[in-house]
Length: 127
Image 1 (cartoon, helix red, strand yellow):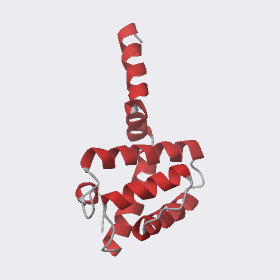
Image 2 (cartoon, helix red, strand yellow):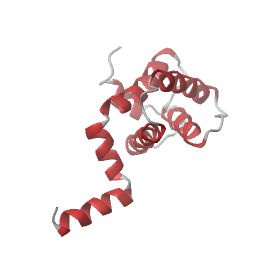
Image 3 (cartoon, rainbow, N blue to C red):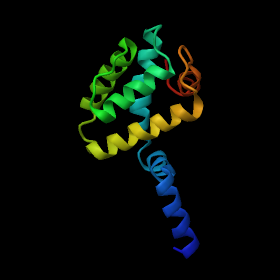
């Protein structure tokens, strides 16, 4: 690897993009599992929005119970999916949660009732 490529790789890792790139390339199944949990819950509950999705992921990362009922339902569904994927190391699962949280922040301003992220990712998740 050339010096320039090493420098860019270090820069990506510091910005968090390296983790996103690695997860998207090598562990797409983990990301899809997380996204499926969010989208399937959204499709069954009217109160789920991007803000609740982000709160649920943050609660998983911090191991705190979410305050919001919709975020709590999402968190519960993420726990179910996590239990089904016991073959995935915890650190890898946490990286996946961070990547999905980054995606939510990219596609949404997380205002109440906003569903920009969910509409975006929902088109890739079968009904």
